[in-house]
Image 1 (tube, rainbow, N blue to C red):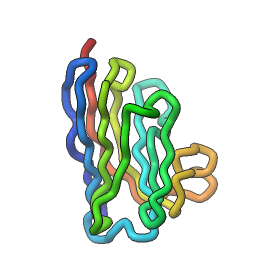
Image 2: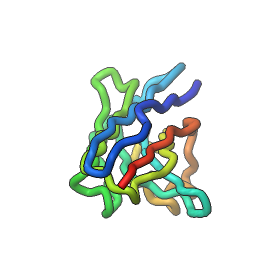
Image 3: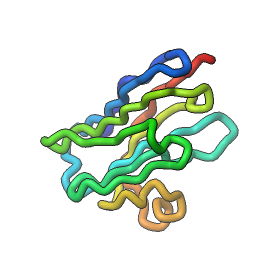
Length: 128
C-alpha cells in the first residue's frame, strides 16, 4: 500500500503544473486525500484537500482560485491542477490519505485523527 506523487518540476511564474497522487494497493474510497507542501525550515501546510466520496474540498487561502483538486471516477488518483504559479509556491508537495474529510488540511485535525499514508513527495520549483 502506497501513494505515489508525480507531475512536479520546474516552471516559470505564471505557468501551470498538474500533480497526480496515485493509490497503489488500495483505492481512495472512504478517504480524505490532501496535498501538503513543505519548505525547508518551515512547517508542513495543508494546501488543498478533498473528501473523495462526497467531493467536499478545502483550499488554503493563498491558492484559492488558482489550484483545483479533483479525483478520478475510479477513486484511485487525485489531481492538483496548479495555475498562475508563483515563486512562493515552490516547495516539496506531498499527498496523504486520512479520514474522510476535507478538514484533514487543518494541521490540528490531521494530528488529532491521524493520517494513514503519506507519499514521498514531488518537488515543485517556480522561477520568477
